[in-house]
Image (cartoon, rainbow, N blue to C red; front, side, top):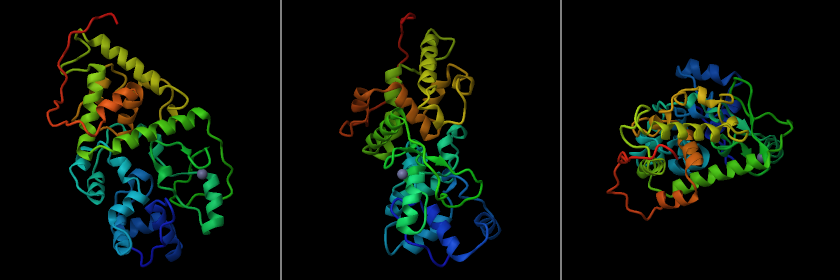
Length: 321
Ligand SMILES: [Zn+2]
């Protein structure tokens, strides 16, 4: 696409490298250039980056780093690949990239943190002094992260619709202790899950949740277990309706007004293995329902899961809890 690409800076997102390459070559809007030359729009949000632009980068950097190393260090492919059924069948991150590009996530519209590019003003100000340019950090585009771990500040959304680099000279907003704590916790869950073989991640997660919640096959709102679903529905809404968690999403308070949470069978649909939810929802299910002990058992990489069945038997449960 371009003849020259600058070397990626530490933790720089590849989209940022492409934009810097563009600045060195052309002096028009990059969106216009891409649309005219390549007949497609991209780079509008971090989640929409699964595009041929990467191939051009791979060719350019192939002598320096392997494609997988490049994607691991300078993209969020690993974050989006978690629990993605199609990505699970692939061997390399480059294969994952290919399958992720066609992925149609359920409920992805509500995930605010991957709807636009985010940056830390402190990082941007420091980097312009150090490297002569600000840039998008790959780690700051994680949908499960709202704060900069280096400066304990809130990541800021870049408000312009145009793809660009983070603005310089902006002031930062300190993150609260709870916000930092939630980020730490979610990152820890992701780290634990990464220890597991890729193909087992989704299966283990759904099985562990079904066991814990006793969500069985044929469980509907009309069955005697309807009350259980109703309780879970309330608990999940409460876990999300907090000042620390709500900003991860685009809806306001009272998430229970939105599908699939309008229905108390929403949780059941989320745990359907054939549905491909946005990975943030799986993280939220863990956050709301599994404690450390459950995770130790379910995500223990030494456990052999070959005989594990998807469905939990429909148990009889007492109506009153
Ligand atoms: Zn920072």
